[in-house]
Length: 216
Image 1 (spheres, rainbow, N blue to C red):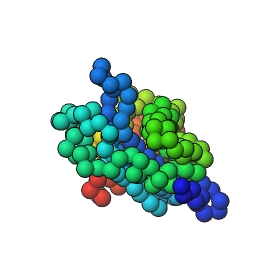
Image 2: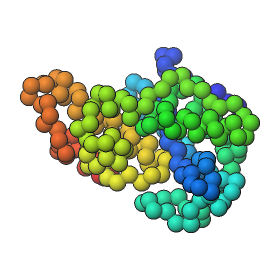
Image 3: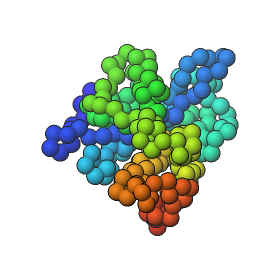
């Protein structure tokens, strides 16, 4: 398996990733990977270096719903002709291994699913150079001013549109949420007495970039 390279000046690159899975029920008590998406970014500028996404066909197609209750959700028909996890495992390994892992709630969910998926095919799982879980970071630094800290709630707070629950789209949304939160925190730290608490629900200043580039 290929080992990923570090960024310039010896600093590990950051890979933001997300996974879509089935939800366990009474019939089967495990998660099946349905989609993986990742974006590699430069740690200095958060500029996109590489990206990768793939649907994944579970061994038992019956675990995937015929219809999805989510917007743009993954259905049985969508993954019917997708590759098995074993077929894309080397690529996923190469994009994750040796990089700093980042994402929303990855520590308690996505990281565990990665280990389970690699264990199932009898291959060593990729290892991170570090980890940034935006759920913990934003809860600590940004607080609950935006609500319950779910990605869809944070995105709505900043006017970034509806979460699609598709891996690569959710990764891009995660990056935009972080940039918006960082902007607010920077401005508040610069002029705390004037700006603290003023960026509630749709500051036009914070959302200018999204509105002009059509991502809202």
